[in-house]
Amino acid sequence: MFTLKKQGKYGRLGTLRTPHGEIPTPVFMPVATAGAMKGITLGDLESLGADMLLCNTYHLHLSPGEKVVEAVGGLHAFTGWKKPILTDSGGFQVFSLQGIRTITKEGVHFKDHRSGALHFLGPKEAMRIQHALGADIIMCLDECPPSTAARGNQITAVDRTLHWAKECKKEHEKLLKKPKKPRSPKIIGSSSVSSASLVSSPLLFGIVQGGLEPDLRKKCAEELIAIGFDGYALGGLAVGETPEEMYDVLKLICPLLPATAPRYLMGVGDLGQMKEAIRLGIDFFDCVAPMREARHGNVWLSDGTKLRIRRSEYIRDSSPIDPKSPTPIGRTHMRSYLHHLLQIGERYGETIACLQNMAVTLETIRSIRKKIAGR
Image 1: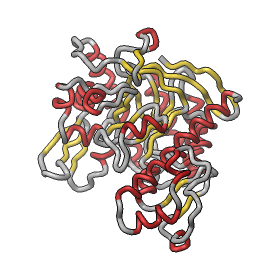
Image 2 (image 1 turned 90 degrees about the vertical axis):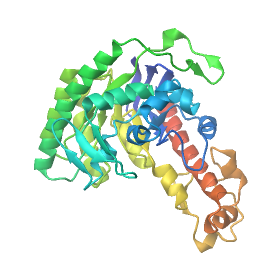
Image 3 (image 1 turned 120 degrees about the vertical axis):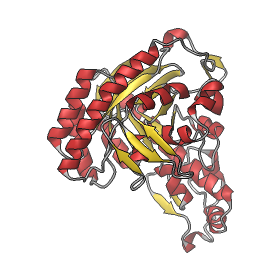
């Protein structure tokens, strides 16, 4: 499933086979929370060269519901996206619902943040929902406290995460044995994909927790490896600790993880942090930062700098947004025009900024792949 092609001083180069095509790694996953992204289309993402998407299990479970999605053939048919999709377990969103959820050994009881309806999410439910959604990569349910949480909280979270991981693996294997419902065609763009290059079932990733406690991180990683998963994620980072503290966790854990399995650093999208994490052995990333910063007027440039485009200094700046932008829209429009659109709340301004930031993010990852390959 995962082929490690090269490993060197700049990181690892590989490919992961999934039901909807091969994923080149390192890879960045744009976050299409409910199957879409604010300001840009999935067609835009494809034109920018996105290799896969991340969709949010919690939000899709609440609306439209996994049964609706399953009935039409899964997320690929539902959204029209033909490349691979990863779904998170929904646990992070549930755990962030302070005051309206209760965590037990069995799972999490919580209220719909909109309607107030009661729900329960446990390991079995997380697997059933994600299988119904038809994702290519699915995630174990884990408990995700902030990295800076007290050691006692981290101990409890690691114990629950490991218990739930075992239950997720059992339920996943049980679901794999059930007769499969027809899914969307295995097509990338307009070309059919050879069945030899694909796998037929979703891949299951375990999640390493433990905060900034080295012994807990090590324990969690080693016990997840003993259970056995298709890939391993590191959760609970980029939520309060310094970049150096995060890198220390990666330096400890990456060497422990199997070289033949992909490694996923959850929730990290800062360009500099991704470069360093790749150097330390990470293969997968996701983050809402490119889009969120774009909507707030922070525009990322191809030279690694940023523009706070709402500042008055750009009112009369007729230079291109980014003369070397990976997307034509960034080379075409003036900085003064983008400043104007965002100042008056014109949605097209958000679209331009979002396309620019996402294009720079994806191009950065492609350039790192080329650097690892020696091109």
